[in-house]
Length: 221
Image (cartoon, rainbow, N blue to C red; front, side, top):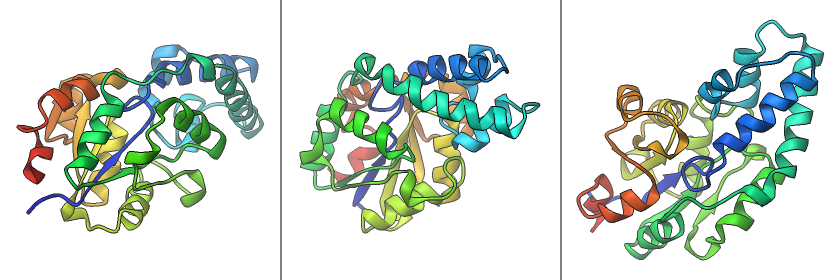
């Protein structure tokens, strides 16, 4: 059966933002009095912010975690001018929409971060719906974001596919019954993405677009 909707993560999938998040979190953690290595932060990018903080600041106080979260938001906003669309992202969304599939941006980014991402993407015409942190209490790897995205896309899990860049995307989608295409553009290896359950892996949106017909998205051609 053809797909009716494709759900897309944004950070690291459509916008090259993961390492900016690492930068912001690294500085925020240090300024909150609990330095963390960048590699440790990168491994947690894509998780719900509360879960990320529990992972990387496991021994910190609640006050330190709260302060780190506040500082991350501040530092990330300042990095906004460095955000860039990943190669082929706009064209991929347009191609998916042109094939009659609903494009849903499935993210739990706070509203202020989502506004930055939307300004960078400039793909409103191709997007059917999108989610944000205001739609869910708990983000990835819990399934809430994907379940809300399915509702907004007016589709069932069996008729949708998720495109993401982290193992947390894949785990979240799988918990909601949705299969995932993985992209390496977030800095996670093909082996890890496939190990988490991705049914196919591509370098970035441009690579997926170049192989669209033979990809899992091609079933809607």
